[in-house]
Length: 209
Image (cartoon, rainbow, N blue to C red; front, side, top):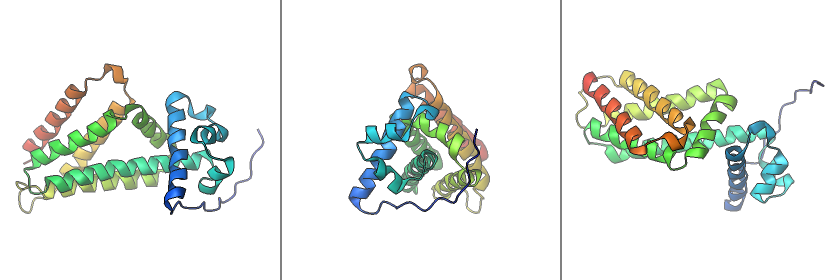
């Protein structure tokens, strides 16, 4: 195999206007859809633009390679996880921590189960294409949202540190989301999965407090 010269990729155009963003989003959606139907290594950029309905040149306006596209897809889906948790935290502010945690768990699980195949591809891409520093940064933000949720609860003990339980909740729930997304949906009982995860979370919080 011929060794390719390593070069620094030129920054691609960031989609700012609505139309530009729609083009970028169409490319991302097409890529994920192709992943659901096939294997990453078999997908070509021409396949992606054909499904997206855009010109080949449009792809290179936003992405330098398929690998960069994969990282972008992971980044934006990771933001969806954080935004879902952030909304649950805001909605639950001032509520008992068990109630807030249950609401957050349900929202996150609904998000994954309602778009199961695509979330499965997200977690696969995350493992294969996320730099370790990026993965750690996303996980730190996920943990911070749990910490904020606990501290905003009406019954969180005054002066009690929330970092350790937040870290454990992050490990438990992110792991559950990943396992659920990568499992065969035909073998999943949505209500049972959500109930068991809520039980695990609330039992842990009861023991901690």
